[in-house]
Length: 151
Image (cartoon, rainbow, N blue to C red; front, side, top):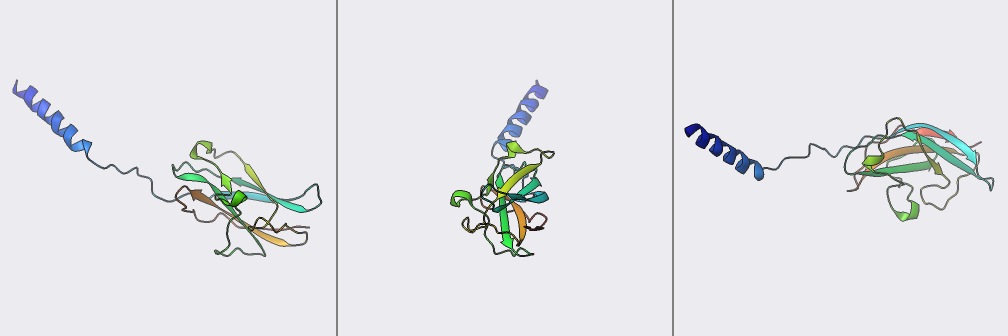
């Protein structure tokens, strides 16, 4: 009888103290950056150049919502350039953690600079970097930078 009372009290206190306890989700705010595999120069139907960025990304963080793509004329990207924003919103490429597949090579075609107005030109060096983007606007470290010449 005494054992039954003790066991009941133990279960009650265990339940009572665990109900209001905040348990962190063990997810820090760090996003893994994507990895650019290659950037190919392609010719569009109108004769203008485009860049086909091929990349791997494996983001299973719950706050992950896609990747930002940064492009700049020249051989190095500075940290102050804006990302490409299709329809004026971030991220450039919308994905979810459910889309995570470490073995899937994805691609994204770039036809303009980050302003979404200036078309790419032939005979120019372009630098491309990507960053993972979270729903609360946080960014990963940059991916590897790739410099390509449109010839």
